[in-house]
Amino acid sequence: MATVSRALSGRGNVSERSRQRVLDAAAELGFVPSYNAASLASGRTRNIGIMLPTVQRWFFSSVLEGASGALLEAGYDLTLYTTGEGPGQRHSVLNDFLLRQRLDGVVAVSLELSPDEVEQLLRVKRPVVGLGGPIQGIATLHIDDVETARRATQHLINLGHRDIAHLSGSPEFERDFALPVNRRVGFETAMHDAGIAVRPEWLVRTDFTVAGSHAVAKRLLAAPSGRPTAVFAASDEMAIGVITAAQELGLRVPYDLSVIGIDGHELGEVFGLTTFDQAPRRQGADAVHMLLRQLDGDAAPLGDIVEPEFIVRRSTATPPQPR
Image (cartoon, rainbow, N blue to C red; front, side):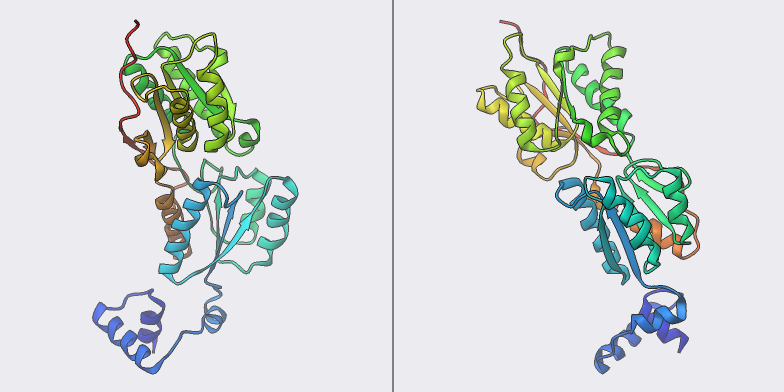
């Protein structure tokens, strides 16, 4: 009976031949495992909570897609909690829904939890994995935003660019992990190390959307004081907005303007965008696997740095020669 249970649950030490025989017999009998009964015996709900700010942004929806696929494969349900734009909804999630203890674990995506919030989550005695930045006392997955931004800027410098602008996020995106600040620090570090002055008017803030960056990029590239020869955008969607703005103004990418981003957006290939691909779907799946390993009693690394893949496409080249 124990062998049957392990084979049906997909967990435990069962040979592949025995597992297949049990599954074939269950399919022939039309047997469906009762997870309610299993949870009473094991103390598990086979339900994982995913906390993220919103599903309307490409990065978050991609992480969610990867996480949900991994949970489905492992036979777990998913409960989604969006913390929204205001503190009230986040407070409700942390202080009400998660404390009902109907979850086996929690994946917190792009949420910089305070020490009190971490203690509150751990108090329910469920494992927690963070994604998007380091969280004290919790296993996390994240890229090094400062170093990745520095490398992106250095790529432009290595091509010979000195007139480089940076599109960064607006203050509303700095609540959790200060992503815009970190990527701006990486940009400024590379410029400083190369002895290149940063022009304040070329540090432009907008939201992380194609439309928002398109609007500010048109103003940047049409400014009477002169335009940059290259733009490092803090996300691929922002970089795509720069490319579309340049095309609307009659500028050729990369012959008149080089553009680089960070993320690995699917549209990057369509626009020939040079980028650092941080594979958000894989991060979502990896976060789930880390959580499931903790449920099995395995220790997880407290800070696991994801190495993004540098993809060079046609959007970056040497700067135009002066006429």
